Image 1 (spheres, rainbow, N blue to C red):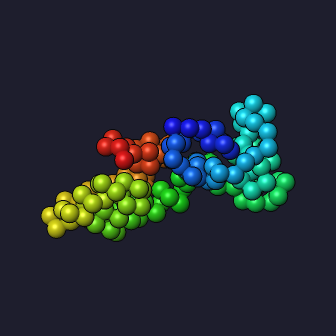
Image 2 (tube, rainbow, N blue to C red):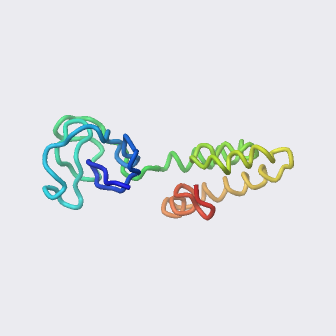
Length: 144
């Protein structure tokens, strides 16, 4: 594990791009992490120090990658996929949980994944953002 050059989050040692902020790890930034406050990050385009929650860099105007990693649209998309194509594991593939997606796909003929997908879709859509992140987006009970 190593730390992202931009946001400081822990990432895999072989990662070329930070999954949190989208910064290419082969690029260089001016300054160091000691130069910025806890609530600041570097712009992925120009390297200027900006607020961690900023959507657009005030220096260069470039839109910054989402800091949360999963927004409301992700929750809604996953819930709708679970309702409509849950029997095929589409929502699991969308969430990056490939092993569970393949498992759903292997057993779709039993109807059990369709029932689970329906239940999961409803639970995803009624969950608040924190609950969705904890249970579904971050690997949930079974992990990734």
